[in-house]
Image (cartoon, rainbow, N blue to C red; front, side, top):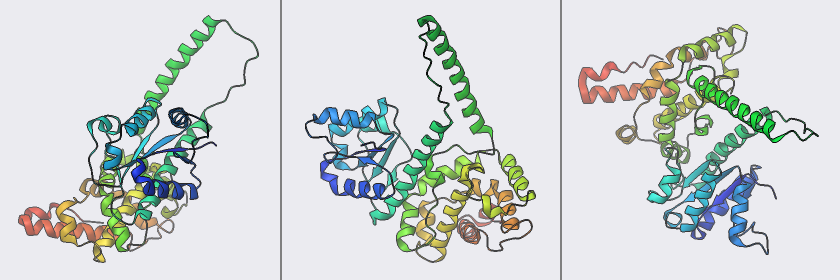
Length: 347
């Protein structure tokens, strides 16, 4: 059976792997995992190699058990050699061995060692859906040429292949350059495009803390983009009569990243304001995303003033994010006196 995700796990972590598999498949994401999907009569190693080669990405259930498994290293190595994305979901707070770190050295771990697991699996499924969706879009954009019934000379094919390779290299270089310099689209990890839950209960708030490192990276990367171009694009959409709320999460506006990142910090601020996250504990280990806050000020103004339509504001837009900024500013002033007041919390 065709599948999207190869699940790599230690047999000692089968409960977590089964839970991940069941949740993903309930969302329509097809998975392969041993021994469930090993075809009877097929040698185990051959089945694993074949399954990885037919997958679109590998999900690693990472723990002390998988960390010590040579088989896991071989599976991850095989996936890397095939060019598959690797998503490590860490169910225990352990660091990878040098062998695994060589293949999965990434700042974007999905930490799932704080309960409940179900909440982390919902986040995981969103991340995987974004990755699979991106791949599907790339496949759809790739032109399919009708087969040529003639058999051209080998030399002609070599020349054509060389030309195609040169064109592909130029195309890749252009896409990389454009993604780094265009304010319209935002190339970043799929974690940056996931909308976090909007109900700030204790479990959700704990999840926001657990994934904060990812969102800090998302915020910093977004702040490095061409903000003037994004502001101009937002103004153009409003001038065309669109309410700002209609493109807040739109993947055609900064790939939807602005809405997702801002929403994360809005919900984080609400968790703090509702006392699910004690501010003193939060502020001692989590930095305020000052660069993102400062550089998106004009965007915030555009969305605030035109949320329901041109010149139809939403008065409490990002009020929790604003309150979070105010708390950090007060904390800085307590610690550093007047120097702490440099944080500008203007909404």
